[in-house]
Length: 147
Image 1 (cartoon, rainbow, N blue to C red):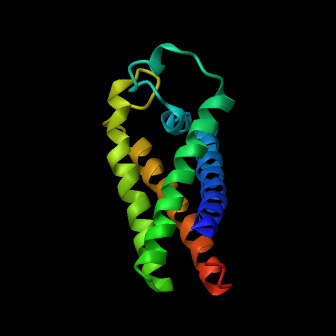
Image 2 (image 1 turned 30 degrees about the vertical axis):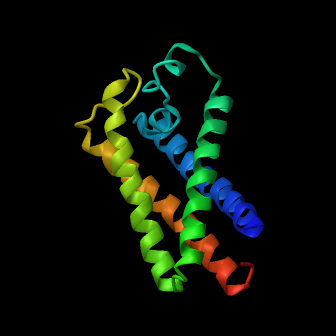
């Protein structure tokens, strides 16, 4: 279990950096507020009144990513998923999580419009990249018998 926590944390940090840098780049180049949405906590009643720095908001994002990655890694290990199952399921789950979270954009004035096809397209692409990052990490661990 300690290994799952360790490798889940490492995988979560790496994947959170991948999606974070992708969204930061998209927001900077195309002015689509997907990075803002990634860090957005306006839908938490108590937290929405507190102004956090970008670094603290990104730290929240990393923590959530570590939790997701650790749970997914545990599931892959517990159910003994093959490399192909890890790849496909991890990517699909990551994209599904992105689809579930995207509607929170209606709860903030800082994030993209819910009807923005460009924003949702990049949001899904980012979660696809997140899923690939996790899947590659998990498969490499499986190949090197780290779990």
